Length: 192
Image 1 (cartoon, helix red, strand yellow):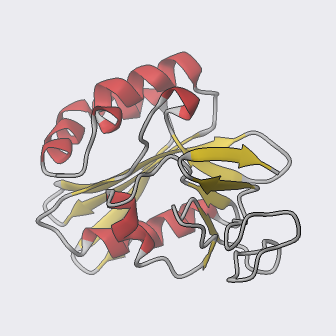
Image 2 (cartoon, one colour):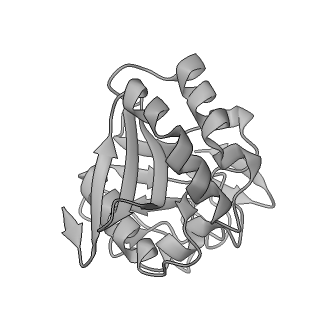
């Protein structure tokens, strides 16, 4: 798939994910908002320890010359609802995507590629901190969004998922009831 001069792909196997180490590390160095939790060594080790077969969905954006300019380390989560979530689980303090700071067209390309990969699932980014690269991707999101203060859920199925509104749903904090089935406020996440 191409998006202008950019092309996208999805890595679904742990060996392929392992082979991304050098170019992932180079992209990590070009993403000013990256934390150690977006490093390839952290994410690949986490996947080898906690990942499940057939669940890996690492969305990649490349320039025409093949250089990696964006990456979203996602996996399909178990549960009654289809959900894509960032690798790292509850032991990762800050989850995020990676974007090359010198390639502004990478954020919209990654947003489109993640939406295609989700194919009707909720994209749950509950541990993304304010000002992270995920915020730049969210700015280009065309599906419904959870709308909670941390933008933790993006929905690709507007007919089946409810997005936040300015009004508070019954029993939920004001303005914070994302379609991912959790709400985030003051740094804590709770399921409902």
